[in-house]
Image (cartoon, rainbow, N blue to C red; front, side, top):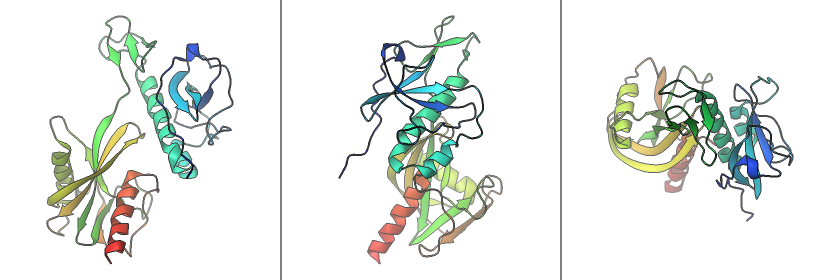
Length: 265
């Protein structure tokens, strides 16, 4: 089996590089097409103000931010649907770093302009010395089950007919397990019994760090909140609605559960 590429996070500063490949992101998160893995440009001298992301296929990769908007550049979600799953890490990193870089041009403490740190992925205020690192917002995401049935729900933001797993942000002072039980109760009114950790994923819309769990429901009674959730129901593995894209951790939760049921049957 051929090893799939991974992003080696060696952050050698762009000023030390002779040539590198750039991933170009515009003002609204569109990503330019490139010659390597769909989104990496040709080897060239580092563009001004480029941000070092690491090594990909043994070559330096820099993020270049374009302050214009390019409607012809596919969005990050479109690229995730087009490219192999191994490209997720590269796209996720580029999008999250671009969000962070644009959102931290000024100091959150004193309001003065910030500058890129010479040796770290950090924005530094030269006035009060505050450092701002790329933001990660911890979230839980869970597939709730009762026997062989899956509890799936839809947000008003979803495409028509699409259902997914439940998710929510972890509040200050909460554990991931506490957040899971609270979110499920708030959104669909279901009490949770046993929970089991699955895996994590850094989701770049815009900077969520997803902690995924399987959870067992104590009962099948559903009472949706009507705000974050507009519909929810129990589904048999053989009769699932439209689901999230394959690369999303919500889809991985669903597929893993359904495959496990198929083995048991």
